[in-house]
Image (cartoon, rainbow, N blue to C red):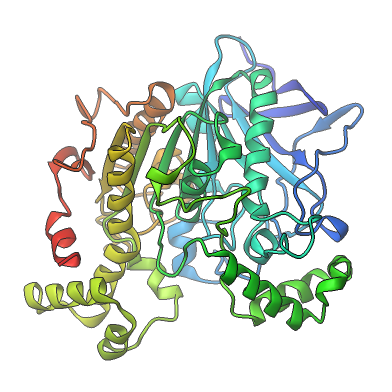
Length: 494
């Protein structure tokens, strides 16, 4: 019997209709918060206005405001590795979720909430490589992808100047999205008491931040961090003093007095974004008494009793591709001068053990270790030490047809979504279907039970504890290795 081509669901603000995509129903752009522009800039999200009739969720939502970034159409390598985007439209019209579900009936399903990458400054709620249709259908789960404010729009700190403004509104947006999931996901066939938050790159940083936010407590039950733990290079939460200084400089650049913050509502969006960029400030979460009272890496200091299970890992060649889009030190001498003790220890290590490695390769290895692998290990250690059940992975699969890509940043994500066909560099590579089936099953198992498992690929994924650091190395096979990054970790820390 053929399935209906559409599905209507009632939410707290109105009825929505999704459409069958493969074996899942896809709902695009359901509002979970009201406008974020004009007088609502830099303020906590508000509920969306209820609607009458049926909202046909057929249109991909616009991106939240952000500066121009590398896109699939602007760089061939980026397009090969990350695939196309769904939308290049930006808007302050509201905040939205995309939802994929096998159906509204039957037993309640695990819910996986995906937070997009792009650091804390760019990205959109989903792209073809992160489309949840196949993952939802094949693993019988519900997938949700929310939008949220980014960069200056998400982290300009004005709360000390006026109580009208909120701190960390980009993260508060995600708390609002999780509340929407709690209140509505049962109507889509999901279980509000079994929610996993998952993020890649900047999305992983957002997961780590949510773990430390008291307001997010109880809204999720497991966490997945892929290629992102603080500090990621220069990206880390800032103190009140740093955030206040960045706000003062930004207001000065925009020509807005501290006593006239209402003028921010009238600045055209392009000029607003230009003003934030001109300050050269890093707009990241701020440690302040309200939304984020302690840094996410200080697990022992969290004022929460519910340390959740964590699946965390990185890719072997994180910087292989993304380094081509960045302005990096052109020579070893300059690179060395930019590194602290940890980075210089690794420079010496790779120079001594791999003297044939060219400078670009050495730089790639050092930045992969210092930006991604070592912070992930440190966060996993802290979570395990504070009672979390932790599972670690290292993704090493390499496309034999594209050695220039390697196991680079973000390569694992389309396998988890079983969406490799949407990525040109992966679409015709041998072995991708089997690997995608195994990885998506393992990630869905973690969302379902708190343990990653897939009988077709491996018998047991052991927990990670600092004394052994058992790691699932995912390549052409799945192999448990004890402390595979041990030498790098010992060298880096002296």
